[in-house]
Length: 192
View (cartoon, rainbow, N blue to C red):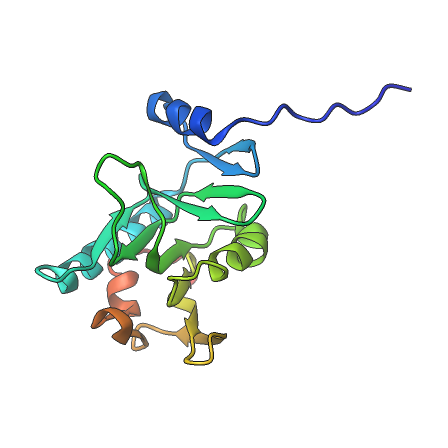
């Protein structure tokens, strides 16, 4: 019987340097890198809609929107993770020379069937542990709906489901909102 070999762990420094040269994005979880799969056109359309609408509302304000080329770094006591969200809003930005942000206020992820379980499980739990995070949004890809997690004054997150093109996700934390009609604008849904 052969023993199962543990993967060799990669340092944060080596990961960041490798990502700058790589044609494929990788998420970093405690020293292990995972290649990211490509996204569908619908996924991309919803991501761009979120970016464009939020950017238009934040123009001239201190908070800025970042796309999926910018990672979030999440530092725990004994490990570090890097994820590429579809969109995020950051009000306290890292230096321009960094390729990641540490303090997102709003994070938007578009759900897909291949990543849904991880997104709504492990990744959601890690995002909700970010001290600066106020709102986490998971947008559905196949119909106009989203799930939001909003931090309360007690420091806990409340979950709310938003359904239909008339629904809107208020974002008073950044003096904005995200209507599902804008988030899902010009998206062709398979069964709608």
